[in-house]
Image 1 (cartoon, rainbow, N blue to C red):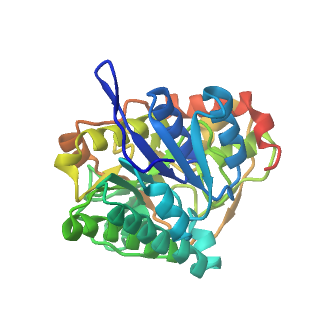
Image 2 (cartoon, rainbow, N blue to C red):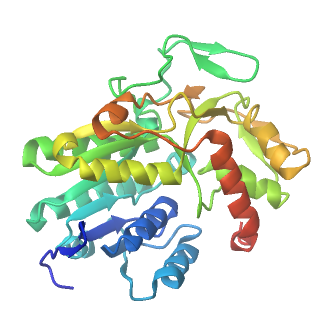
Length: 357
């Protein structure tokens, strides 16, 4: 593919060349779908190792055509292939990486290679390309660690923050608790620093629990989708902790709007970090509140098992999203119940996609 960036104008909309690392995954395939609808020229860079990747690529090919995008099947640690894929890109969405805390504990070296080195590779490829692309990095709330210094109250159905009614802001001290937190936090800080040192147009989005269409959740990642899949397939459900832990959750369509807002406002937000999640208005406890809602959708009771807390698990995590609301003019539109109902219906309609789980 030629290395010269080309803009094409269709009406008032300018199309551009886009690289999505991890573009065959849950978030990446949703992003690719949106950008293909907007007629951007897309390159997906993915090693295709995760559950659901082949299905997601087939969906994109069936929907937009086999030649509608370029797929580079390679690993994020392969700097040569990544550098080649980056040439000519005007936007880079860096989504590729290892995504589970439990996996990071079992294999910290691979976690470091995928997340820390992988992000460094992506940043270096962007820097030396000479194209000065927009670089969006998807970080995580896990960089805040267990937040043991934050006061928490235990209620009947959920934990709550004692003194943080708006949630955790970007000024919260970083505490990389777990190898996953360390590796993602490394990428988080490198991405910010590449804006300060090299002038790259980077932005970091610390994401909360994201859920939605094309999410092939498994037990240690994508808990909300996994609970729905397990319930529909009559698989055992294990709750780590007591089920009262609270998360703010964000539906995939709202996340795509956040990405769009960050790109549109890149001159204002380059070098910045934003919490992106459901915020205080879109929270749910892992089982004491989500369980009854899922049972209502199922029309039957659901048995569960309980296990010990995992390293770095937070009793509560709710993002303070006021910075994104103010600077990006973005806020979630889809409520908890509406989003969960949408996901439940999509999984139930496409249950054959989950035969391998």
